[in-house]
Amino acid sequence: MKRVAALFAVFLLPCLTAWGGAVTVSVTDESGKPLRGAVVFLEPAPGTPSLPVASAPAVMDQIDKAFVPQVLVVTVGSDVSFPNSDNIRHHVYSFSEARSFELPLYAGKPADPVRFPAPGVVVLGCNIHDWMRGYIVVVPQPLFATTGEDGKATIGGVPAGHWRVSGWHPDVAEHRSASGGEIDGAAPVSAASIRLALKRKLQLRRAPAGRTTDRY
Image (tube, rainbow, N blue to C red):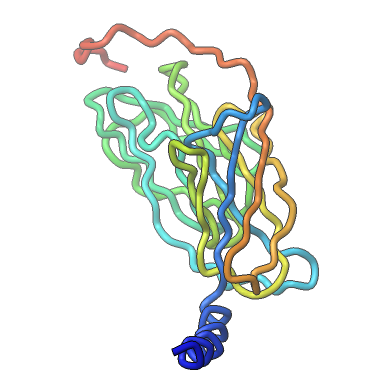
């Protein structure tokens, strides 16, 4: 039986390596508290080839005067549509370095989506409703995940090579991602940890609920 198990392990290991390893990333704040909703992603270290990136269409909706989802993760080159599902008009904009754009006051669905050609965090706002905040995280590779209640996320299918681990959260200071070091994709299972410094959370006052007859 031990001989069979040993032979099975010999044949299984190359298969695991071919399919890629997995990394579990733990994200906490400065006090060590797990952070839910953090985006973790990988990018190749020098000497490791990049993966081919297939851009995919995505949707950032506007529902009940809020961006839905609040955080959207897409790969470089993806097109994002901005439908307005409210019965009032919105004016969506971003002044972010990764992608600045403006969708003047509109209802329904704009004719054309917006393309995001560079990695980075794009902060969204509405000129009419100041409390509306949304985020599009543009990652360089299709290797990303979002942390759960325990502050952990697992990224699978990591190819062999050295990969840099980064993390970001909507409450992080200056919307900058933080490094979690490097992992070796050839290892069947890896672990990384990231500690994020959060900014003081300011909540802009929202208009009273139920005012569905507003023009804007």
